Image (cartoon, rainbow, N blue to C red; front, side):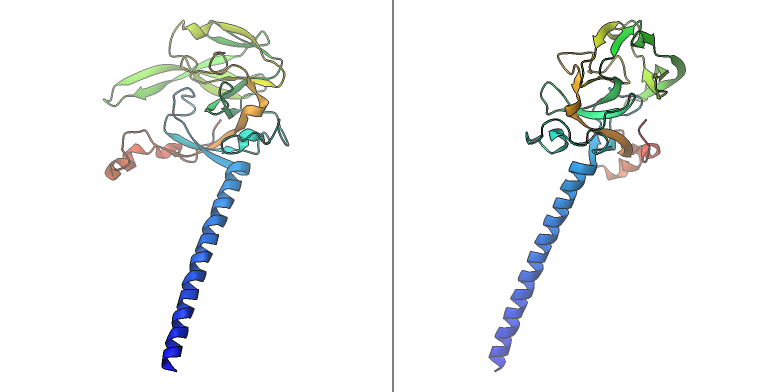
Amino acid sequence: MAKDWKVSMGENARKLRSSSLSENVRTIIYALLIAMVIRALLFQPFFIPSSSMESTLLIGDYLFVSKYSYGYSRHSLPFSPPILSGRIAGVPPERGDIAVFKQPIDNRTDFIKRVIGLPGDKIEMRSGILYINDREVPRMRVDDFIERDAFGNVRRVPRYKETLPNGVSYLTLDRIRDSVWDNAGPYQVPEGHYFMMGDNRDNSSDSRVAESVGYVPFENLVGRAEIVFFSADGSAAIWQIWKWPSAIRWDRIGKWVE
């Protein structure tokens, strides 16, 4: 009788362990599915790897991109599977938005730039001044952008405030006087496409470079940049825990992207 009781207890313990394991597996699967849905339909984290959007976005910024802002295309899904054509619930971007998009050349690489030209617009740079449909975009000199290298050396970069025809204002950098990009265009934006530019005007591969980006199809837009949720200046390696507090840009965490 005692032996049967021990066998029964052992079987119950195995069943409990099996039930607990299956429950944990189901919980993990549900969590992964929820995460995939959130990433595909709502928000996707994005890392800034280059200086093309300085001083608005800095290398080491981590931000959330809203996937629903422009509707959904195949590029809304991981690996851009060819299961959708065009956009579902498409909402055109507004001039001045900062948008993540798939590079038209390969339809794989993520780029982030500002929407400058809408379908049908004529875009041109003349002596460093942006023109949209032959009208000068006003810009005003503001305080310099301050850069510090690893050795503590300081560089001051001229910074300007531009205001687009719809009233959206933002800051741009002018690193190189009389650069090759100070006079570029004119560019005529095709229907269904957008003209994207980096705020760091002399150091940005964008729609001015046909062989790299060119005009961006509406379908290639992934989402709109919304908020910086973390930022680090790169001065601390992942294992240098004692350096983390000074490497984190605390003032940028929670900053809305404009």
